[in-house]
Length: 148
Image 1 (tube, one colour):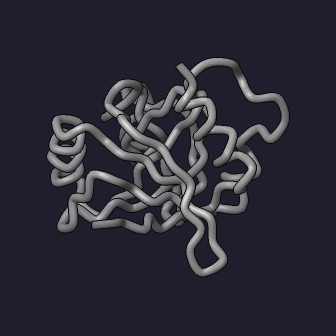
Image 2 (cartoon, helix red, strand yellow):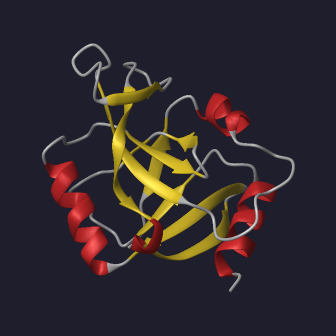
């Protein structure tokens, strides 16, 4: 089962991801909640350009070793970053999302917000398809992820 994540302001977010020199080592991948900046001024980290506005939570819902796979999918002329979660991480992610249904989350890679998809709780796939990222960036991320 696959999920195509709807990306708000994808052009801005993809351009915020550094294109030049990639850091060494595995990419640090995190999914964080996005919430109302005014409601949580002390609990949020940075503004995110979503349709409704919002800020990224300080703490990740899933991160690091929760991601067990990464790939590059080209379908109908579009490129997608494929992220696969471990089963415990998948359950945890969708338990948290169930409490804030149909709100965007922030996908951070190496500290950069690269997408703000809405993950639909009713499907709950283990692999997420994230659009709006440059195909060359996807290839670099996959290579880094698979490096020992």
